[in-house]
Amino acid sequence: MNDDLRTPLTAYRTMAWIVGVLLVVLVLVGLPLHYGYLVSDAPWLAKGLDGVDGSGGAGWRLGSDISRYLGVAHGWLYMIFLACAFWLSRKARWSGGFTIVTLLCGTVPLLSFWAEHRATRVTRETATA
Image (cartoon, rainbow, N blue to C red; front, side, top):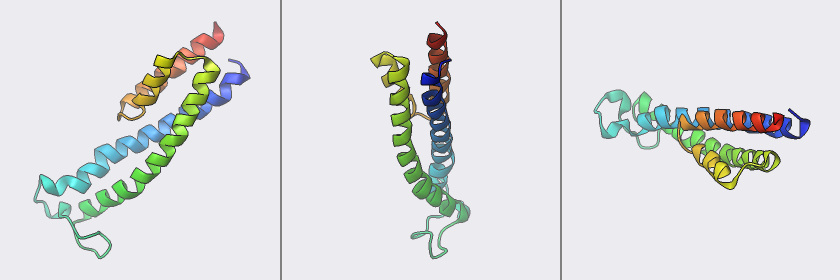
């Protein structure tokens, strides 16, 4: 693979994995803990006022913190992911449809890992052709 593609591909893959892992933790851990009080009366999921004064269950506080902080971090990092993916799409000359599908897959937990694998494969195949 030539150096024109190596840097954007590495940046894209790094950001895809970071954003993908954060999204999985946010959606599969943070949000269920944060909103678990709606479907369970378990004391550790009891909703507190704001989690700062020690009110609420430990699960709710953890979910609230994950949702608050990881959600914001994921949002900002997703913007960097979009820039890296777009940069790679121009360097690798992806079609418009392939680019859009790759960008949108970054919003779906677990699907983002498939999209990263697919984009890496396609980029490497076209670079060696």
